[in-house]
Length: 310
Ligand code: GUN
Image (cartoon, rainbow, N blue to C red):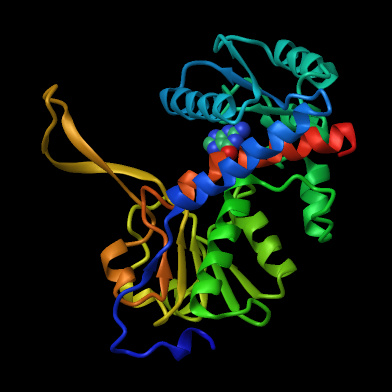
C-alpha cells in the first residue's frame, strides 16, 4: 500500500518516538561494549572542539555523556579559537595513531581560518564516525554500506523510516521519496540511503520550482533545510511518512524565570498541520535529533569491532 491508501477519515499520524527508539539503540551499543570487553577492548570516542561556539559546546557535552553511558572511553579536546590549521591537523594525526581511539570527530563549524575539508580529509576513514570523509561518502554512494561509516543523522532517520514502514505495512522498494535539502551532512547521504533501499528519490532545494507540488509527490518526505515550519500541511501527501530533521530555536510568548525572552524548538515542518495529514511523523524535539547521538555511539562501537576484527 502506498501513501494513497490512507483513508481521509483516519486523521492522526503515528508519532515516531525518537527518544524511545534511540534508547533501544543505545542499550544495544552498551551490550556490544560489554561483549567487546571480553576481547580486551573498550571503544574510544575522541571529540575535538575548536573555539567556544555555545551550540557546539552543548552538542559535544551530549556526545560525551552518551559515550560514558555506553561504557566507552570518552576523550574531549577543547582548543582555543586561535588554534592554527596545522595544530589541529597535528592533533588529528595523533588521534588517528592512538589505538585507544576508535572513533574521532571534529565538531563543525570550524573557525573561518581553518579549511574544514582539509581537516575532515585528515581523519582516518576507519575512525570517521561522522561519515564525512570522502572515502566514506564514496563507499555509501556506490552502495558499499558494509564497509562505510554512515553519517549519523540520516542513519538514524532511516531507522525511523523502517519503524514507520513496519507500522504502516509498507515496503520501501518503488516508493517516492522527496528530500528537501541537499547538505553533505543530511540531504545527500539520505538520498543515497533511500536509493540503496530502492526508493525513487528526488532531492529538492532552495532553487526547486513549485516545491509544494514536488513535496506532495512523496510517500516519504524528509525535511532538512533549517527553515522553521516551512513544510505546511498541504505539502504532505495523505498518509505519507514525514521525517523532520530541522531543529530551529524560535521566539515563544512570554519570558522565563531569568526574564530572558522565551524560546522554543520547532522543526522544518509545521507539526500540527502535517500530523493531521501524514501516516507517520517525527516530532521536534524527540524525533530525529535523539537518533543522531545514538547512531554516533553505534558507529563508534562498529569502528571498534572492525578495528579488532570482531
Ligand atoms: N555540527 C553539527 N552537526 C554535526 C555533526 O553531526 N558532526 C560534526 N562533526 N559537527 C556537527
